[in-house]
Image 1: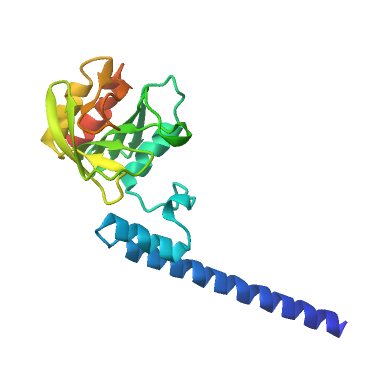
Image 2: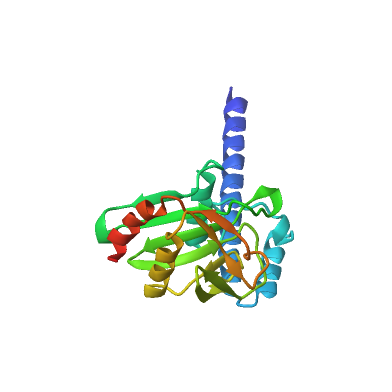
Length: 218
């Protein structure tokens, strides 16, 4: 009886110690990964991740919840994943009035990356700022691309990871949104091959933009 009790205590102690060690190790990896994010050059940043996780970053499976990509990218991909293929766009709303946020995600209808993943055009009002962004399912090297939408041309800048290209915020983004909603279909033009010719269904989009108008006051 005493031996059984002692064995149980030993096993419990051993398991607890290993769990604590595992948790500490995981926290340490996360902290190191956050330090890698501060490295500006992309190749050096990828090498940093490679060293920490002991595997090339492109081979590391990262879920939406665990990745280090911008929150705008996560919003776009999650909204896209909630859609059926025949759906043109999805509206997501948080809160009411000017204290709330809202965004519309439009998945590309005609282009796929690996695993049949599609880019997403994201129109949003976040923290009272209007913006238009293109979220990609894979990283690209371009730091800046030229984008033309219904006669308006802008330069969109990449985030640190090459998965999100953003227009200027505010009035420039609002004017771009109005142009996007002018017709039932949109074809993106760009000097970047991965963006040029992307097609989006914008049928009824004006209704979805009402939530953005209310929150950003335009």
